[in-house]
Length: 373
Image (cartoon, rainbow, N blue to C red; front, side):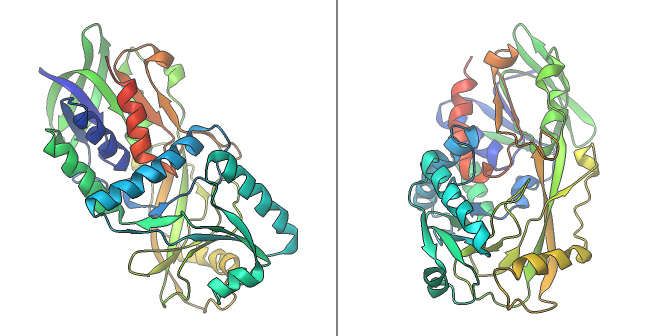
């Protein structure tokens, strides 16, 4: 049986950030990833937006870690030449009865520490983005976009430079809480089973995190949430978008509405929407994008971009949010350590959805402190 200091389960952006932080702290780290490459799950299927910290309840982990993580992420990108752009975002009201919500959003953002937002008139907004239609808007200058794959590559490089090892096609099939550590059985290549005894284990398996936690013999099932999956579909714009900033409508239950985002090459996409799935196993998720859902995208996007051409939207990709509460209920990040479940060295992360990418370096600092044994 291999004896290892730290095992990180999952090589998405959160797992890689945590592995880097642990390695920088001098810990021996092995990253177990069940797929054939790193960052191929949630981390490969998002908007690649650096969020300012606007929408989340004051005092929540999402609010706190997003604001702290945003600063850390911009600093990291500059230091490691990770492509990014602080392009800014407009949150738009498209009818007079929505304008009071802008003041509430700005006040919530300020309470969270995102204090550079300002409410602007329709004239100001349209002077910035002439193709826009709105009655008023919020300008968020700290919102940006990032090359998420380049970011994950940099994180992995940092971790490996400090001795961390990435083991691909390695899935935790069983785990047991013991007096001398946490015993894992890692199935490699679908057949070979390798026993590992670790002092610390961090479960950040994204959509699979509850299922992985359920494999830990000795962990009380009360501390393992029931997973719910909210699919978000994206459509790419066939033509060049006449926008230089991101454009968001007012948020809706379960998401932030059908918004327009840009990549670093200027390509625009719309989404995600919110499609709750009945699937109970993350392995059964269908990521196909139904072209028929584009009808709603046209209707929603034309509220703020009336000139969106017919047949301009093409199915692009879909991502899935790892929800831990059913529709109609909002959940915070869950970073669950020994003070909650009583097992030294074990940290479970559940429900790490947006703004997880933005918050990744801040989450890594929290987990590193929590995983000490």
